[in-house]
Length: 71
Image (tube, rainbow, N blue to C red; front, top):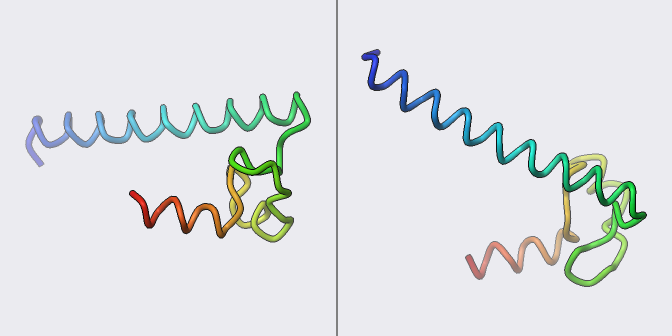
């Protein structure tokens, strides 16, 4: 790999890490304010199986699927 490819890869990894940190911090805030595990869209409980599979989830599986269709 060239130095340029290494720099590009490092930038991508850094961006991904920053995005993950933002999601973790947002989840910690939701834990603090008592909204962790509830949808940011509807306020519905996300469900234990989804939270175990994806602890940073912010929407129910149905809401997530709808969101992805619109994207």
